[in-house]
Amino acid sequence: MRNIEKEIQDALDAVEEKYNVKILYAIESGSRAWGFASPDSDYDVRFIYMQKVEEYLRLDPGKDVIEWQLDEVLDINGWDLKKALLAYAKGNPNVMEWANSPIVYRRTEEWDCFDKMIRQFFSEKASVCHYYGTANSTYHGFLMGDKVKYKKYLYALRPLLCCIWIEKTHSIPPMRFEELLTLFDGTQNGLDDELFRAIELLLERKAVTEESELNEHIPEIIDFIKAEIPKQKEISDKIPDDRKKDYSDLNEAFYNMIK
Image (cartoon, rainbow, N blue to C red; front, side, top):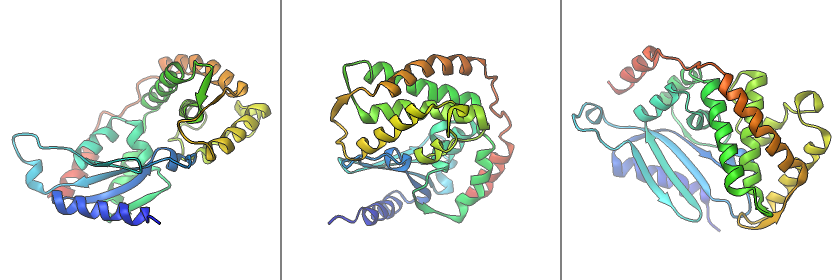
C-alpha cells in the first residue's frame, strides 16, 4: 500500500535538495482540503519556498515557480516567497486559502512570522470577485447540460457560499466545506431546509462517486446556483476596492528574512 504522506515529505525534501531552497510552508489545497474528495481525487500539494539571498539580488529575474510532479495521484508545485507575498499583498484569494488549509505538511518558524501579517491583506473586493467568477465560469462551462459531474456542482456551490460568508462575517472563508456550512444553519442565513438536505445528499454521493461520472441534476442545488450567481455579480460590483496599498510591513519582514 502506498504511503502518500511519506511520498509527499520525500518529494519536499527532494525539492529542497535539487533547487537549494528552503520550504517554509506546504499544504493541501483542492478537494481534499475542502473536505469533499472523491475516491480517485489526487493530492494537490502547494508550497512556499525561500531561495538563497543571491537569487533575490540578481539582475535577470530567476524562476519563481517550482513544478515538481503532476500525475494521477500527486500534483506538487510551489511558489517563491517573494511571488507568494506579492500575491498576499494583492489579496489573492487562492493563496489566502493556503493560509487556512486544514492539512499542513510542513510549517517552519520562519513562516509563522508572516502568517498573521498576510491575513491583514484580506480583501473582500478581490475575494468576492474571484469566487463569483469561479462559480460563474463553472456554471456556464460544466453545469448547463442534462447531466453533470458532482464535483462541478461543488466547484460552483462552494465559491457562492464563500461569497455569502464574506458578506456576513467580513472575514476569510474557512477552507473546509463543513465548516463553511456552519454559518448557514437555517433560512435566516440564506439556505432553506430543502437546499441544506440536498447539499448533504450531494456530499454523500460525491464521497462514493468517481470524479468523471455523469449524474442527474439535483434541482434544489442547480436552482440555487442559477439564482445566486447574478446576486453575487451585483454585490461584487458594489464593493469598494479595499486592497491595502501599503506594503511596508511585508517589505520589512521579507528583507529581514532573506538578509
